[in-house]
Length: 349
Image (cartoon, rainbow, N blue to C red; front, side, top):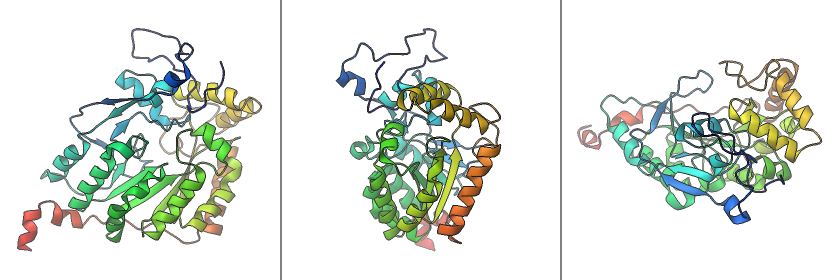
């Protein structure tokens, strides 16, 4: 089968929860327009905040206005959640986007709850809150309006320069240490980005996004996530240097892990996109995870182990020391929310 441009996954693994097993090549009989067509499906969740129990993450709550992601990053761990909605983790993860239009109202209800106490929320913990449809629907912007109204802290992670649209809100929040933005940049090589993350913002636009956020006083952390041995691990020093020039305060990283259906999707992709180095890439990924492509253990799953993982860790440490020095991200302000939780109470104090 020919390589499908504009999509990360090239196959549709069967949903393990389904009673029916279908062809893993669902695109063979479709014309080009149908192959690339995205469908948006409105869903009606009862809640919007998710408790984060992982000690690797560093925040207590996450919030996802969308499930599935049109960005199409082939390595995305969130692919494994799509089968719970009845879809494949492959092409369908990129084609069938679940939209939670009631997210802002659900968030306001939660923040108005008498039992809620301020705690950093990650927007999003699963799929990108600034994927293409956000330009039209503005669900993430409405969420930010609620968070600003309540003076509640939030950490944003995205690959999309659309975050600059909301600078008017983010600037106000940053003045009170209520927001940080983590911009995911995995490579400085645009041809690699186009295959690895086909519908994300270009590299130059993401670098300009760092500048725009920094100029507005919004703290920026860059996530080189994931580092994929054999594809982008040689870029660590160049990437840290470049984002530091643009104003990033911190750089963090993860090493790729191919859990669940992502292993099948990624290996199929790398053998089609980079057949000359596919074996090298897969073998070096295994070197980072004790001979396997996946790892679910807290503490090691994000950083890996072994010789390659240690080399990556040391390179990142040296790059940070050289280009970022003692720069640190500010902490979150958890004090303001109590005063703004109930606007009427501010009339008496």
